Image 1 (cartoon, rainbow, N blue to C red):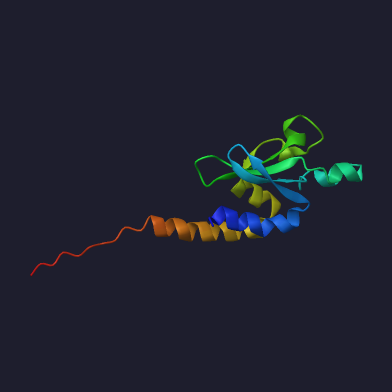
Image 2 (cartoon, helix red, strand yellow):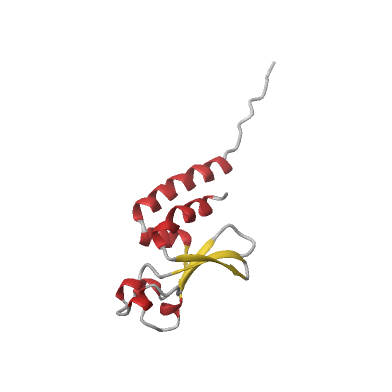
Length: 122
């Protein structure tokens, strides 16, 4: 499980209702938009699954997009563009975003570690 999948599974319960769906680049999630869903007048529109968290092909990156905002509908300013998972976390759950950054820095630091070999001069 990648770090992105770990944090997606952590936020999915707070993004209900949602369901899994097969996209072109893999299996993702369709959900009610957390940014503009509460602004809808009818209950059926509040729970309409118009947003998606989808994986990008050949990478470990995920993106969030809302069809209300992208199609010029009744979305708000936060769902008018497609955003990467880290940007979505930053806007939706800032404490979890800070934890995500700390954990990502640890993983990145481990990948960038270069061992120092000491030469034996005897």
